[in-house]
Image (cartoon, rainbow, N blue to C red; front, top):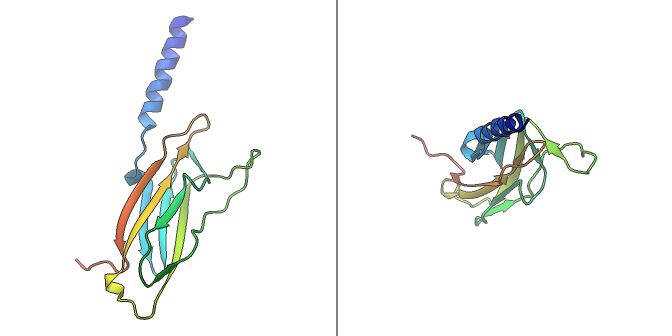
Length: 140
């Protein structure tokens, strides 16, 4: 019986380590589109993301001549504990307005985003990412 439990534990630890340490590059896409900054997170099938603003966020450094609105979070249904768990592909959106006299070619956004993915039994460490993107992409 002890050998069986040891084998089960080793298999579980091996399986967990295969999925551990998810990086931003694997599941995150950040882009500037028209009047919005959009963060897309592709949540792996066996995981979920719980809406907690400390662990699921989109922030942008202030830019002169740009007014940012509050971040728009995806909708979801609260579970029995009151938490909203998300699955699949989700988006965080931060809309902005530009001053009339702003030079659009000079606008650069410093974007901060983060998330924490969980299995039913435990959560991965939070992931924080930082991006610098122009309002208007430079032509190659």
